[in-house]
Length: 491
Image (cartoon, rainbow, N blue to C red; front, side, top):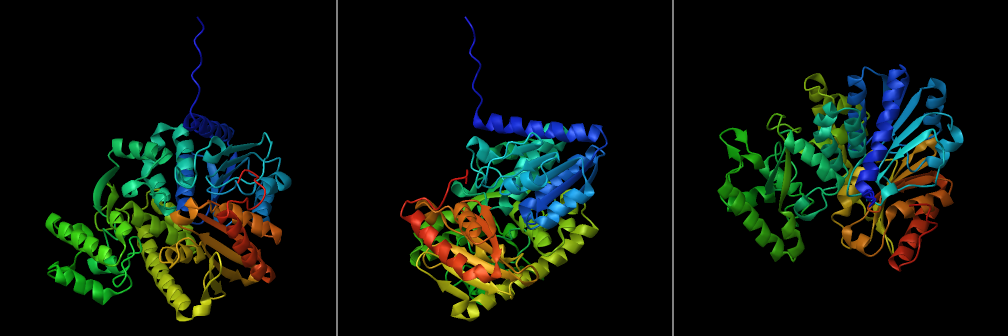
């Protein structure tokens, strides 16, 4: 009797593609080839760049890392002028296949991405590692840094110590969407590596951001998940709320963080917050109070690197404030000068976010509600590299969660507008796919766009802003009616 070969699972096929990419890297290093790494500027992209960077450093490879917002003619020009023996794109690339095949078809290229795929390319010089190629959801199951991690681990098991950085990238892309804010899919394989090596501990706790570093009342006042009407954005009222529960915000002269609360205080706080949410008619938000907290066990307590979600925000700040080298250095092990400087960048980043949010709320015309979407007109005031963060924050507090949010900022020197779109699980369940909407709408007006179903981006010429917004509004309406937003193209 002939034994039947066992059919590979999608995960196994995906991991095989990661091994193929690892072989291409090792072959290049063996020939002392120069490697140029390009990565996206958000937390996930910075983490991905650092993971590949650390793996290359350990191979004693010749390489350079460049972090950027998107792939454009400038990046193509860098590839052509530098003539690297291998180009590695992390956390982007899958939306630029046609451009890459047209402009740099003869370069050896690794595309390590998790975004929806645009176009099809049959080029033996390109190795494409993307979960969507195997029916795995790149929006929830693995991030760009996770893809990079599987490649690094295929190079050497020594790189399994980079698992916590891959998890930080996943949190940067808000992939903790499962019950009690768990990570799922391929992210669970990464978590298993991190936990078994005693690098990460998973604890059940209140899930407010700033568990390690933020004063308790400020953690309440800055909460958007769950959103606490009457407390979110209200520092004084949050202090009063704690006082009513006899929870002291200070221990002597030291402000307390959530991690400093006793078990009894945590129970009292979570019970009171549950009652508070129910009294406001927000029954479904109660489930978001307690969840999984991911602690990086080797990092110092009371620092932003100890909690994976805080670490992600620190990385995001370095990328979006034009200091990605700091984030990469921290991910690769620097805990001195780079971390000290990054903390200053983070503080400045938070101030900018507060300034931009206040500006949006000042005048009604800066955030308009259309038939099927909300639009934030950031224009020349909001930094285009932070528009994604602003849209992520604002979408959680929308009056109508069935409508996606579209925000834009102008890039005057490039005569372009950068758009960032975000939506909610409610809209997703009704058929909204922002990655497809942004791609179809931007291409109609000479731009470029794509991403995930829940979060996507685009850039279009400034003189096409209103046409683009109108088209997005129409395409979302189509999707809500169950119709196709445009041609499939694997998106």
